[in-house]
Amino acid sequence: MRSMHADPAQVWLRDAQGDLALARVKKTRAIRYAHLCFHAQQAAEKSLKAVYLALDTDLPRTHDLAFLIDNLPKRLPMSPTFLVLPTLTKYAVQFRYPGQDIPVTRRDWLTAVDLATEIYHWAQAQVDGIRKA
Image: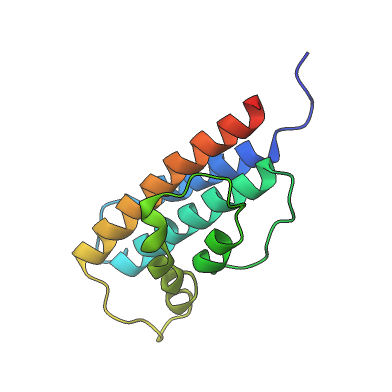
């Protein structure tokens, strides 16, 4: 019989997947690259937080991807993507408030989506592995 309660890590991964889908939406006049990069950052953040939840550890209340990475257990395999992933943190805050944007290019957007996608897949593998252990 299935539990009445959804696995919190899977819920966060599902939401990360939704943000990733939004990050991949085509840019339009109304949808700027900054908006899309915000969702890429959110996908990465939620993916990392899903791993914390799978480990039954306290969920850090931060958007700082470097902090989230640095506080993961050292026993987890580290992705090379972790070296550049913190560059997405700026999209969590700077672009949330109109008038504070800095230019975001198509290349920035493509990089953000690639990084978020890699971390999402890494996190999914970690959550699956933790649940099987």
